[in-house]
Amino acid sequence: MRVFLLAVALLAGLPGVSQADAASQTDALGWLNKVAAAAHQLSYSGTYIYQYGDQVETSRITHIKDESGEHEKLEALDGLPREVIRNNDEVLCFKPDNNTSVVVEKRKIEKSFPALLPKQLGIITENYRVRFAEPDRTAGYACRVVILEPRDQYRYRHKLWADMATGLLLKASMLNEKNEVVGQFAFTQIKIGGQIDKESLKPKIAGRKVIVSSEPAEATELQQADLTWVVKPLPPGFSQVTVMKRMMPGKDVPVEHLVFSDGMATVSVFIEPMTGGMKPVQGVTRQGMINVYTRTMADHRITVLGEVPAITVTQIGNSVTNKVR
Image (cartoon, rainbow, N blue to C red):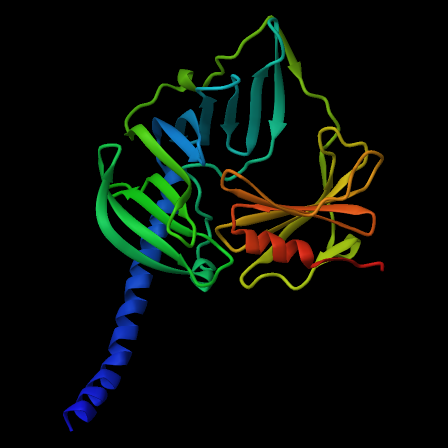
């Protein structure tokens, strides 16, 4: 009888547990919306590290939000000098060409730390369970910590630390199925709010001559009807974001480039004709946080890469088919 009554009590309690979990996820998702907005709506400046494998890169970021929009400068502090300066949707990359000139290239806006979260977070809960972890501190700030637990083996686990007062993302770790960190961004020093001199947004890289890159448009957006290649079936939760033809460095012919996302992770598929000197290859390699899968099909090389587990890039690569065959 006691066992029966215990079972009844447990069953009766299940809906309450489920509702509590749902409420907790809703609260965590609401906090993530604040985190996603903070990276764009606040002014801040600081230094952060990007760590993957045994590699560490250090960058300085200055971000100003004012009545005219967003203005940002990203400066590499190690390796080759390079600076990326953004004024709203205009992105310019500065790099030295030689001792007397500097090359300026136009770039598209790309997701970067601390603006790692998409602006639309609704799709996140379809692929991740969102929950709070124990509060913590990083870079001297008290933080709320959120875990994005993958619902399957096709994506990594994410752990996010955000300033408790403002919601600005201060640290982000990506972990594999063994709970090992495969990549991490983290501020080592950060100032949030206050007045930031706009002079700090000007490029430091200078030369006697400025060369504005005049390369032809590197990418052309394609319509769905113009697609030569398709990927079916996709891993659960992933959908096509865009497809384009683009010129790649060192390539004589355009490469077809398909992009897929689950709301957090992004996977790129590059399809290029096999030309002289190219050898058939197949297999998975890892470059920091990125897994890369390559195979040959119908005289084309297919390369799939993304910040996702090897099983994901492999399945996507093996699902590529030619529409005209």
